[in-house]
Amino acid sequence: MIKKLAASIGQYKKESILTPVYVTFEVIIEIVIPILMAYLIDYGIDKNNLSYVLMMGLALLIAAVIQLTFGALAGRSAAIASSGLARNLRRDMYYNVQNFSFSNIDKFSTASIITRLTTDVTNVQNAYQMIIRMAIRSPVMLVFCLIVSFHIDAQLSLIFLASIPVLGLGLWLIMSRVHPIFQKVFQTYDRLNNVVQENLSAIRVVKSFNRESFEETKFGKISTAIFQDFSKAEKRIAYNMPLMQFCLYACLLLVSWLGAEQIVASNNNPAIGLSTGELMSLITYAMQILMSLMMLSMVFIMIIISRASAERISEILGEESDMKNPESPLFTVKDGSISFENVIFSYAHKTEKPVLDNITVSIASGETVGIVGGTGSAKSSFVQLIPRLYDAESGRVMVGGADVRDYDIESLRNQVAMVLQRNVLFSGTIKENLRWGDENASDEDLVQACQLAQADGFIQKFPDQYDTYIEQGGSNVSGGQKQRLCIARALLKKPKILILDDSTSAVDTKTDALLRRAFREEIPDTTKIIIAQRVASVMEADKIIVLDDGKINAVGTHDELLGNCPIYKEVYESQNKGGHLHE
Image 1: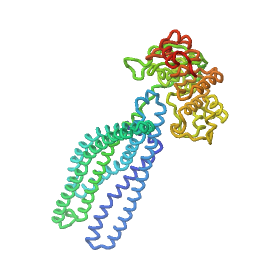
Image 2 (image 1 turned 180 degrees about the vertical axis):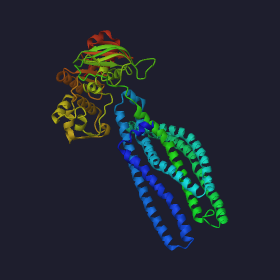
Image 3 (image 1 turned 120 degrees about the vertical axis):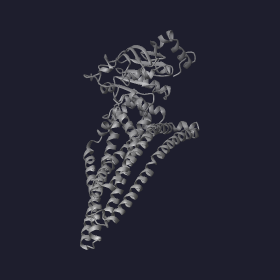
Image 4 (image 1 turned 90 degrees about the vertical axis):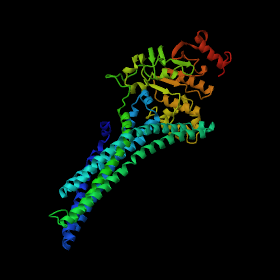
């Protein structure tokens, strides 16, 4: 996990290395200051040596300025390094997600990925900043202070050592009991983000069914669960401060008491025993040692919080796509022919019942093929194997005479255009959305594709026409308009295979008929696969595939299926009242 996260430090290694260096120099100066103060008291103030007092005062001022400078440099470089790590982590995670197959994305929910890119990265960023600064400062301060303290008085310095095991045991107990809670909290965060995302994307449905109160209750339950888990964790973490304060004040009292006894016994003579200046230095070092331990405990707590986040980030970074290019991939798709040979497919491997069960069918290049079937008959699953969005468990899916697994994935998908069941438009102008199909398309190409998709007519009615701004998700256009824009976008790819996954359901029958005629006349060499609920959308196809419960029930033309396929005949008659078709 640490290796995966460290790989994202990248160009910020310099700042990550400089921060501990600056911190070390800052600590050294901070340790020198109490020694200068002891000299100031013992050899300046106690002996009424004004010139020595002025000299030591100037030395203290210079030391303070140097310490301040190194502290500022350390803070600046730590901020740059931690922010840079966060930036690179988000970038590396996002880029890796882009390479995921659908099955990889199914493994992580959208809400979970968003939480990992935001909350989890912020936690790791804060922890990293503390690690390269506080986690270096505290041990260095602790070691140097102990060395100087033992040099001044070894017996009194043993008090500091005695407090370390007490603090260590306390911190270990706190860490071991808090980490599982934070693991649970971030999983609950995923659920919270999922509820928010679901609510906002379906806000029109929520309002039309007057379900605001239900959604508020659902959100409140998850939010309360996060509050309760965080409260539980914070209550346990809160034990850290009383423990630290107990050790701090116990050490100060013991050092002050025993040190005062030594000063009285030696008559404040540094040559014989402990002096006032040395006692002041010891008290200062006691504060520094215990403050170092306190800072170290804060670092440990931050590590506890961020550990769960780091593990979740590491999961995304370490996830490898299920789909990879072969060693010597094919880069050219010969034509739009498709063949399924004994294909079996399941979304979850080793399930009892496959989604597609022993599918065998051939589609010639340039054919128009309709696919019909009831809900859950695996129509969408069937077409998603063609551009290799998923891989078959067994059997072969052939495109252009070659197994889809033999192609370079990008080359294959460039020749297969899909208009999915859920049409998605992105925020931006109509032109920008259309150029997803071909980023180099001219304005004339855009108009031609939209005319073919029966979209040019309504676009011309907009005040800004092709420069009309589309809101996120296409919320400012109708369902039928959105579908036609998505079809035009797919056509701009000039694919060898065009797949329409129930993507004309929101258009009227007249427009649907115009689309079919345009496809037949304008792109005759493109293989067209049309999934539809309306028989009218596929009845003119060269062949129609009837799917039922993941299996091919029948294949044939409209007339053939009316005669030999009861499922198709029943659907046709239910839609057309005894067989009379209304378009």
